[in-house]
Length: 403
Picture 1 (cartoon, rainbow, N blue to C red):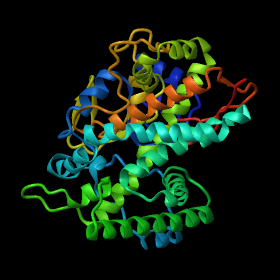
Picture 2: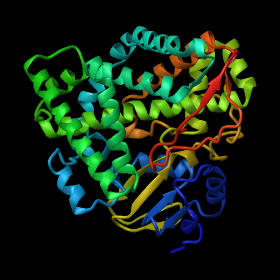
Picture 3: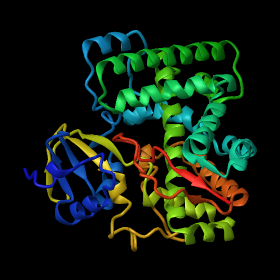
Picture 4: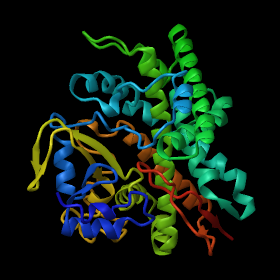
């Protein structure tokens, strides 16, 4: 077993792309002893793995790398413990979770969201446009993505700020090894979050509304049991996090890329009809979700490498999206790139059910900003850093200004 490159793999690197390029050429499938996982870097291998769920299971897709002490676990068991949901199930179990989500994220429902997304985006711009400078992620990208997904779910607007805090606590708790006292604090917040969602589920059982929570609760499939309370709570918790964190990162990254190369921002302003194409290139160029995990159900050979049964795999979407064998000039940001079969939303049976919503939010965010603040530029002298998580990739802060 070669560990030459695997030892050097740093999943939290500020700029992982030079390493990805080296790995694709020298050791495209490598073993990381630190993560006890096989790292898959090539587009074709990732795509083929995603198309074979019977061999490459999603059972570990949501496994946290964080170690919890008994005191932290004591707090967490007061809430709803993790159960299999759509992201970490296969076969019939996956279908049971996915079918209600497909209805919940139906194209007709997403299309109806468009006026609301425009209203939120413009309202947020109104709050800072006179200041001539803003931290665009916390004041625009994040609240836009969060308010949209919470509205779709049916969470009351006066609970948005509390839900934001709970969601952030949960993300940090599950993705970052922090000191025990902070873990305990965030674990308590996570339990409060789950209890809040459980109360909403109970309310919608009694009085359904035209929202995603009600759709999930009352969806019926022949010969299948409806989703149980703990399944609904864990699923909603995941939908809130995934539904706003990845979209926030996409908007922030897209702005950074285009404002660092102003000709791209100029082109976008002059070609608003091509914004959907630009969104796809942002998703490819610096994917907001960098990797997903899989587990082998039997010994299997991938590209000449023997992977043992029950081996953990990390599929590097970010590397696959920069693969020279799949994309022409992959390290260049090309707003007019076509075709653009990136991996940002996954592939196969686990393709992201929220892709249409993310695309809608990205299109409207860039349309509103480019129309209302055409002279947007990055405040010089910033030290830009990415959020320190394995799964999500995006900037912590991005200050912009205009005249």
